[in-house]
Image (cartoon, rainbow, N blue to C red; front, side, top):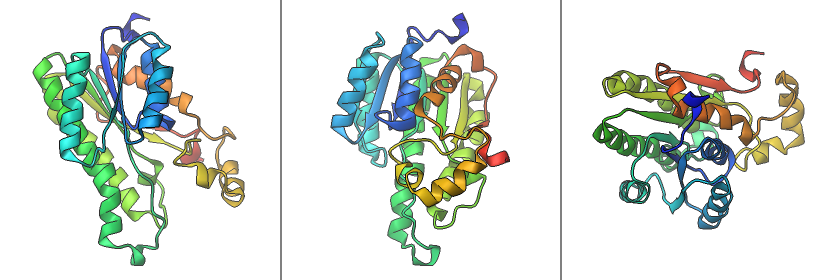
Length: 254
């Protein structure tokens, strides 16, 4: 299984202190990677870092608001200074929908979501791409999108627009970055039991309506993203690029 061995490599996961991001970070750390996680909650950063260190590699946890260009540039510079390089970057940080009717959505509401979900992804991947090109030996760019790009989500237009932008962005990146040996892919999670999704998943009416539409009859879990993160960061995915990989227990096709 040498092609999945990440020893000597560095993975960066934004929003890596909980939920899907922490699930991916666990998988990467278990596969031997040194890991950097960024998040805005320092207590959660510290707790996640302590857990990740139990897998044996170096772990760096930094506070960073990905919507802020200066913070992203500073955090990325510190990541490289402390861990030496970045081989894979998982742009996972995001915020959920504000659940307002479209006609009542203000420009401020719209921009609050896109600034984190879309601007933050752009700023993170731009910094990563620059570093990977400078390193000269390829790299992996991965974005966490959403099933909102497949299914209509009432009161979620801004969120859907941001996540749709992710899929379009990785397609463009896959073409532009190919000459450098850098791949770009998106992940499309279904309903995953995370703090972000908890209000919906714990609402009985929602659960009663949605669970019968999931063939596996369970919510996804953060650990369901350990393997795909390792695959996308590894040599095994060297020719897999420009894709949007759905991990939803068959929800969107049932």
